[in-house]
Image 1 (tube, rainbow, N blue to C red):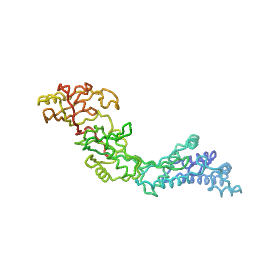
Image 2: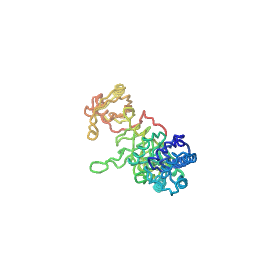
Image 3: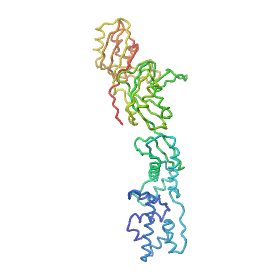
Image 4: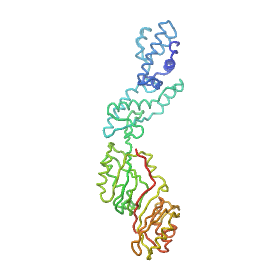
Length: 441
């Protein structure tokens, strides 16, 4: 083996082939991190060719060991060793059985998987993709066995080879662009069946909505009887996206929510809409915005900004206490109020801590807890003897209707408690959602 051992790659390859039959792909993969611009099939074929040449040199130099090693390895070296084997032994070379790892199927099945993926991708209008693989445990264990026995530190997995080679074919044939962070689709290759399936990645679009009417819920609200509580919702307004992008459905992720009978005005409410299983991925934000605004005319208004990343969904739906909101409440009192009452209310609720139990009206569907929130400021404007408008700046998560009424003492202090009379929030508008900053994509 002295002519082979001069190169550690050839030495390890010879010892591998003494014990296992490997195709060009699987042998080359054991040294995949060495060399640039080569496929594993080219590496494997080159290694087998060099082994044949080195052993031939040994034979020509009269090294008896080289003859024995060559005769042993020739059936696993394959076609590159056939003529030399016939010359030395006088017999036709009978190649060894199929590859220990892939059964001599890998190179053909990579092409098959790519062709199958191209057929499936005809249903989609996309620009970017990523290839993933599912590897049977028996195949992975055989590969790991060889790596471990021969200390192969420059090897890669069969999954990595399949992903790369299928990806190269899809790039070449379809002009698609690989995207490792935010692909339009993931092409999954199952190495147990060598079939593929296309996983359409959700389209995430961030924006802001304004709710111009009342009795509009944020999401579709279906009662236990299977009936809709409200005829229209913000989610309904965005559902047009499913039709435009040939998608399964849409999911709204918003920065908090207002009551169905409250309007969302002013700066609007930030949101991210998730479009599930869309077949059309070439998104023109301006066109989408135009269509959803036309559909929701005079009820909702949307401004779509740009695509979002998955991490932004948890950010936008994060802890309500990290944001503050400005509300406009129309308050009706049981008895007439004076200007001094309203000025006193403003002073009292300047940076005031409020303890609030989950309101009676939502306790059947929300956890019954006691929370503490701060009212930063209140500004009042008298409209009538028993009516005033209140601009309230408070921490997110504070129930404003109950801040006004007190909810039978479950919210304290409250407007009603301070004024010493019953008070009722006749209408409520959200003017601003503050303290939320989303990264631009």
